[in-house]
Figure 1 (cartoon, rainbow, N blue to C red):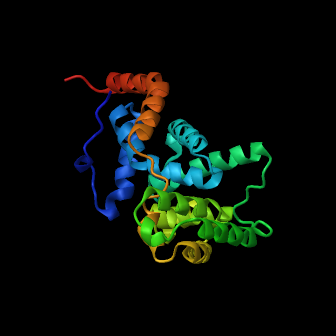
Figure 2: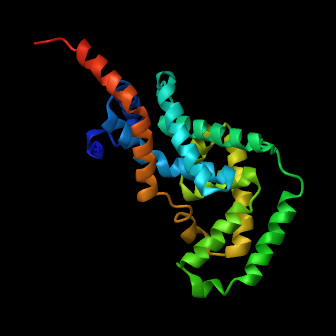
Figure 3: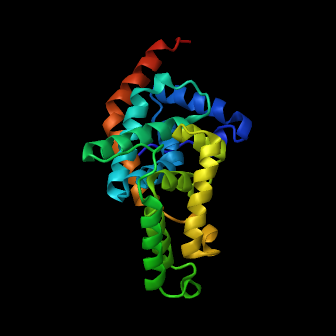
Length: 250
């Protein structure tokens, strides 16, 4: 398997991130499979969490991540570097996830509130709070993490996706707004409302637990990388061969 490029090969300052992403995109278009693997490993977890926040299903979210990379490679020539790869990839993943919801026949607009969504959410949180043991005895445990994930899943769609990107992925307001095509003020409002409802169920443990929710690493990440590279190997090899032919001989 191709070894990923070391992180230190790329600029790591925030001001250089967009330029580094543009350079990586160029290397991938030229058939550099190692650069592609590096990009996938950097963004897989974020894309998975975004897709899962829309679909509520881990297996389907993993499929969305794979499809995102295939679509991203096919349209890599359209990437201009503005804003960096994260929001560009996020929009591809979001559109793919929403498309799957449409095929299920569900209403999928993130700009619309579901009727009665907040009331239904509070009923589910109250039920979970009564059924679960004292959170103090479960702090840091897998059981409490499952309680948090269930509470996040119970959020209305438009709140859940913003919360996942802001609290779990720790994206900025600007990054979240760019990824979801929302106004920054809308991101702030939805995040505040989501936090308020989750805090009613989980209290002060919320911030501690949120970042460890919906993990996507190890074998899951490896499987996505291997599958995507296998499917794109002919195209990457062809691009690398064209690059070699164009290089002047010495």
